[in-house]
Length: 64
Image (cartoon, rainbow, N blue to C red):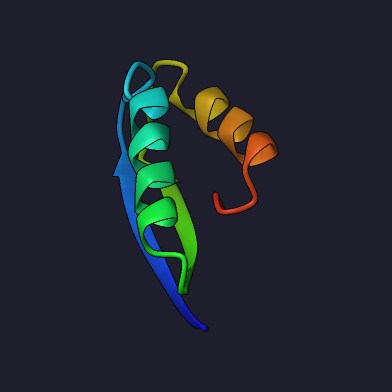
């Protein structure tokens, strides 16, 4: 099984994290022959982006 890592830079994306999760799930479902990792990089956000990413990490094993 091939591994694919997608790097997602974020800056003040608090409101977008749930939408991003929805699309990540669709990608995984449509491509089951790959192991997916989604690496979020918080670029100094001043909103609640980091907490939303940490919440997502605790919910899904494909978020690193």
